[in-house]
Length: 245
Image (cartoon, rainbow, N blue to C red):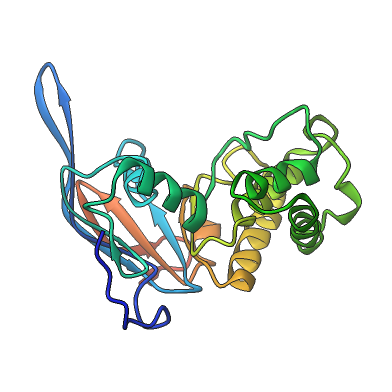
């Protein structure tokens, strides 16, 4: 990996995708999902990603989250080009610099809310007392102070997803990637959960890229991009009738 030691984290994008390509191989031949795709996310910025099913939103998030490698192009996180990173270095970056929120919360059912938020920190080497203090702080910020000792089965869907948000922020990531984080929730709960995600990410100073089909929530983000036919462009919001860039 290469980085510029003189670069300020406040002036360098948290995430830069430069000329990224994603091609799937099939019996019918190569299928290009997108090519020459570029994107910058600034610190504290909440960016929406919309587009039809199958347009490549999840693939884009996986590349940004170092879960997949692009066919070509560069992935740069906090000024560091990931192209030459080993698998171990990629794993450490995912653990320390990136938080993930999925459509399904994937909480560990045998552990309570505080445990689920503390465990990623302890895996990263944080002591148990500090990890639990951080978990309690995040759960309190997300309105779950009274639910810390509850297991996932004792929580509502919205509460489970807020625990998942707390878990994603536990290791103080610079970048949060969310793939349909409110997809399984009713509209009212979706609004509360998205609001919690947005405010918590901003409070932590993290950049967030949020894939969603919910145009109402998309309209509440700092800017929104649409991925369609392999192109990434400003989104025309049908709810308010103008482009959100």
